[in-house]
Image 1 (tube, rainbow, N blue to C red):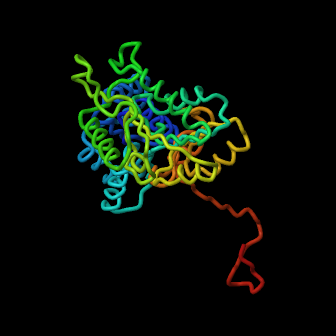
Image 2: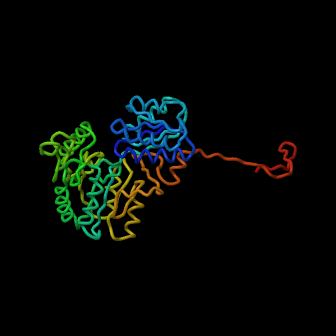
Image 3: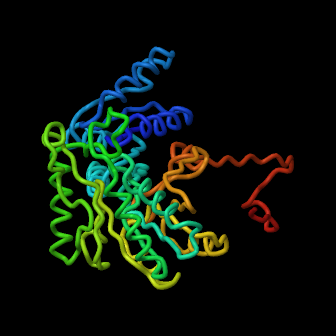
Length: 357
């Protein structure tokens, strides 16, 4: 099996993939992320020290265009599992197809998760706190980060005011310092991509009510890849901030009238990885969860990850599942065996009364 792992949770996602692949009886080659290879290399060393047979697990660092492409095209790789961006996931599929043969492929790709906040949520501030955790943990660089915040009309103004107050209070700084809430994004290239997406969102009519730029502070913040936590309003369903996943500390804030409009807005996306619902009505929670076109749904929480619960998306968010028994099945191939135990001889062509079955 070939595994290509991402930079945003390098050891967690590598461990999830490696463990189930080995448990299913496979040998594994892992290509760790170019931006964060060290933890995966160290994990390989630890597993070797623990007694994993030589050659069972190999970690091969390198760029996606070289090491990743070679892994996707190699004839001995019978199954490939990838976590990362949708464009890269599609390129891996093309490379596998061009190499010939039919091989298994699973992928966990982009997100752009909606968060639906209904007027019957228990407390507006509680929902605001939950949304900030969903959106800004790991500087918004998580595949299921809340990106499109949809709030019902009756509480929209109260929610918006509380959200702005909360977001402006978040401290940007060195992630090694306890007082820091928002650390940097992964690279200069990623920072430039975020700036471009926000600029295009503003050109399309969006307004940054908080953030929307690099911090103006001196020292570390002036040198690192930092971006202020940002809330965009006036975002139409056609706006880049609503259509695209902005992989950083940026969210859009929109309003809805009723349950039907909330689902229509939430599902108006090519992505379908995760989504959250804030309500005290359990019947509504079940209805909306069934209506959301996404593989993962949370009610009054976010980012919860039960190892026994399947993890994966719909549409452009990928194919296949991690976690739970579904993940084990991804790394196995079903075989069928039929044994005849009847002692009566069969002669299909020697008896006109013979029956098949």
